[in-house]
Amino acid sequence: MDCDMYFVQVARLEDPEGAGTAPLLMVGGSASGRGVVTSADYAVREFGVHSGMPMAQALRLCPEATVVPVPREACTRRSREILEILKELSPVVQAASIDEFYLDLTGTERLLDHEPLETTARRIQGAVQERTGVTVSIGGGAVRLVAKLAVERAKPGGVWVVPPGAEGAFLQEHELADIPGIGPSLLAGLAERGLRSVAHVLPVQERWLQRWFGPSRGRWLWERVRGLDSSPVDPKPDRKSISSERTFPRDVPPGEAGDRTLARQLQNLVLEVGQTLRRKGLAARTITVKLRDADFTTRQASRTLSREVESDRAIHRTARDLLGELRDRRPGAVRLLGVGVSSLGGGEGARQLDLLGPDSPEETERDRTLSRTADALRKRFGDDALLPGRLMDPPS
Image 1 (cartoon, one colour):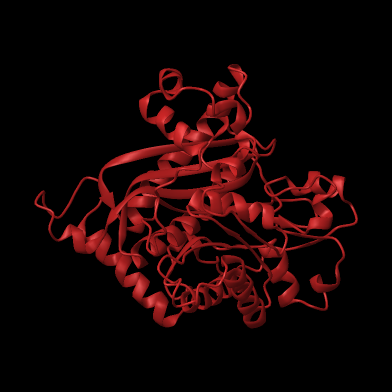
Image 2: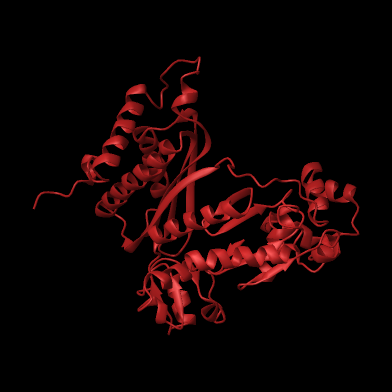
């Protein structure tokens, strides 16, 4: 199930007199052309606008469009509401993202009196729209891959069900670029061999795909184009990364003043990422810093530590060094800064069983205690209750 142009829908629902009346609406960035498009309504997309496009370029393509910021809190709240509704209607639900959900209805045939899957899907659509105001599209199939492709056919606001046994014919209607998991490098390798659609790949023997792309990748591709997918709908999938980023209202210039601005924002981002990490009971080994320069060149640097960390101090120390490396390589104007953590594992609970000792060069028990104490204070008294000194407003 996919929420159609979700951010646009929520913006209109939250502001019916403003965004709700705009015939051409884009969400994200700003009307001055900063940032990127998070979502655009279907009318705007006809001008060639798409998600991730620089807002300045989008406004050149569709100058009459209205631009509003992402209603983040409302999007999160409504997504949780949708998830709770789906849990009432399906025994297994996985939130793949804030606006996309997988439902596994296996075993419900008798409970639903053997009604057609399309009938069930229409009922789910109606329940979500009635209780949240959000219009959704639903794709159905015997495996996740087919359902994912079917929902694209269902948009906007429709239902598309691929019956069992029809997966092969359905897949043959797709280009390879449509298949989830087939990225640019694999697409390029396939194109070099004249393979651009599923129909082109199907006659190729598995051994040739394995010879070209490696045993595991070749086998995966052979199964993928046939609609074979054993991945389950997992209500609690492992989280792979946590990140936060900010686009500046004006490019941050090179020099000392710009470095101070970046350092301040880096600390903010580290606090956001660290709090999320600890709230989920996780710790991370890999720290990543991302920069987008004024010319839209995106660069990033990562470092994998000897052990998992969870404290703000440990994350910030590594992120600060990575930011310095990126700035040394190219000290130009910056429009976006981001911080992320990955290689996630268990946090405090798992650490108690660690036989290598309580501390490491990257992080001490004191670091962890201070971060968890700060989290508790902010939860009780608000996000501004306790901040690093560099984030405090200077005295007037």
